[in-house]
Image 1: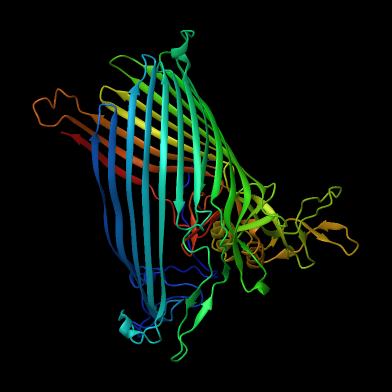
Image 2: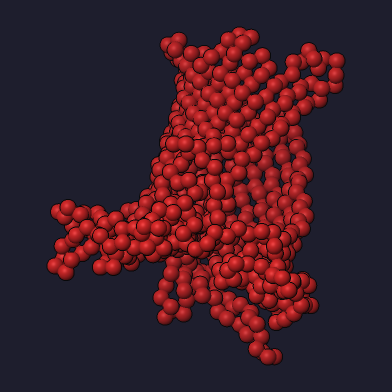
Length: 627
């Protein structure tokens, strides 16, 4: 595969080629009407760039105060309190003739966040005997969070170009919420060591959360870890430089978002002098329990040839129970969804890190290389009685959690195919007599957006102060639905739609005869009809692509100045590097980067690429000076 430079566009079908110029407003309608060649679907991109602006003003303060008290040689106390606070004002301006706001819009979002942590830790450390060491710790933490959000918007303006609320042409739209959370914790640690080659770590923690109901707001989670340095315990062949085995078991608890327990009313716009309120469409749950994740982990760290070669293996398996989910319910109940504890998901994975120093010449060339391999699987073991499917996302494609399936399974619609395994046309697309492919409204599994595995390969070469490094990232497997290809295909703006514009196209597949048999499709469609029908956004299967990729993530060229040059200066070390990132990409589809993330209303849409911006290369100069 050749490396590709990615570029995507938001476009519509046009029989003539058209290029935007930096003309923003229509002649004679300055300040009122944008200049465009099609006023039905989208905005002039220059108009969006220069007229529809967003701004923000953010002030943030964070820090902590800490005191360490040595009570006795073995006993110490740490006291600490920290805060992370920010206040942000976001402004949004939309000019007259914007597609969504024909008479403009002005909006302000006022965001406030504060998190304060106060904790203490009492530590006791003692060498009990020549071979046995003990360290005990006990502590506590109080974490308090406060969020405040207020949005006011004028969704139409009286006079173009004046962006303030006094210029609103209709009543202001308002949204406001405040929430608070408090988690109090007590915890303890015990660490035992024997001859510095055998270690046992025990922990216990109990949290009390304000977001869970009384009786269920306290949850305890312990852990046990064991490790042994085998190479220090016994004599091993000279091949081995270091051998360590480790294992662990842990339980972790988790609470929920604030105000998920009781149903309340929300204020709406008043009707005359009468204030209106409405009930929540989500049925809250006063009996929620904390989520629980139990995990085991085993691993080893083995090094060979005087640490010239090393391998680190880790296998883990975790089971998550009592997940706090929002499930849909019948509208006849008066609600759209309800909050419950449900589900059991099993996660497992393998991580392998290989380190090597293939070349090491004293005073000369050195080559260090690291390969990191990761694979993970998540299986849905159960949901709740009477339910075997849970909808995680329904933006563009459906991400469904089905009992027996994997997290990340994507479902969607596509085209009807011949399903008779005995037919010579098995698997081919079925068309009607007019040559149009038949759409299948049934949801089918289209794949899983999670990769089968990922690999990172880091290399560094150094020679007498010079160093060269590069990093490759490889993701194998997984699928992605490309809205860019679907929209660009149906509108005739992708390069592949040039085929058949003059001669027409016969859609590959068969036509079903009246007797149920099939014959090859021989109906010629115009290029416009073929691409408009095939790449319709409802045909999700047509827009599915392999999400595998190989990226040249980083290349670095640097030089470290010798200390003898800096000997008579106040500089202790000096290095200079030229760095390039995201320099090349190899992937199946040339129209988008499968690593890009799509958003809908501020929420990440998994498994979907939606008119994503092109990936960008970056180059930089890195100067590192220590005094």
